[in-house]
Length: 257
Image 1 (cartoon, rainbow, N blue to C red):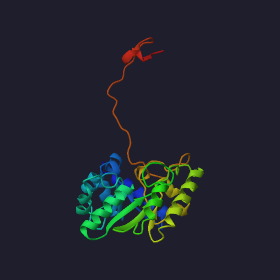
Image 2: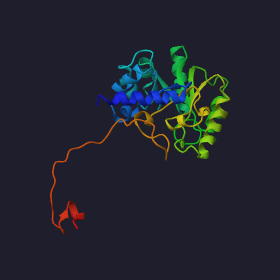
Image 3: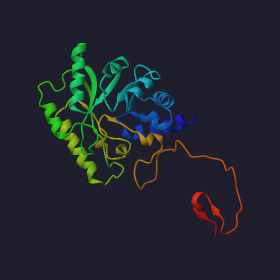
Image 4: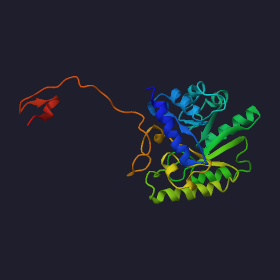
């Protein structure tokens, strides 16, 4: 386990260099993809990472205890009902994925008497998280669409970035740029791990690598530039010599020839 942060740091350096001049964040959802979030986060912080994404508020509050105050923690699923004050107390920034979340966040800002930092996600074609095109129109038609929010980033997520020639990549980029043009003063983030290996126009101001940090190949059919972070390892506990016709295992699933 103690070598894992070293390999993650090496992968982070490669991704950061590939994405420059965009800032490079780190996605640490599910405990850094099952590797134990705090030591991985600490190693990446030492490497210079200052932007961290988790999935749930509980992950964010736990991670905050292990990172310095200048580290920014974003929660990808936004604030579930009843958790908004935890975001404020632990200095977590929600990714707002619906009109309801936006309205709730603005209500809290009004209650506290000052704007609150937030990220807004739009759906550019994956049909997962984020505002639909119709919801974007409803949101931006409001006279004070971003009122009560200190809008840090407009983000979306690529569906086919591991296939560089897939036309969906360009379609999503065009849809994302159309929304971004309506918020010209807002920084943007589109590229996930695989998106970092597309053209620079996918990088914007911030990239969000997840799987590639932990050794997963970012591009299908090409050599993997990432270092492996984990491996399967076990010990042989028994060897046997058996005669032809002998059955092995439950339900005789194998018969020796």
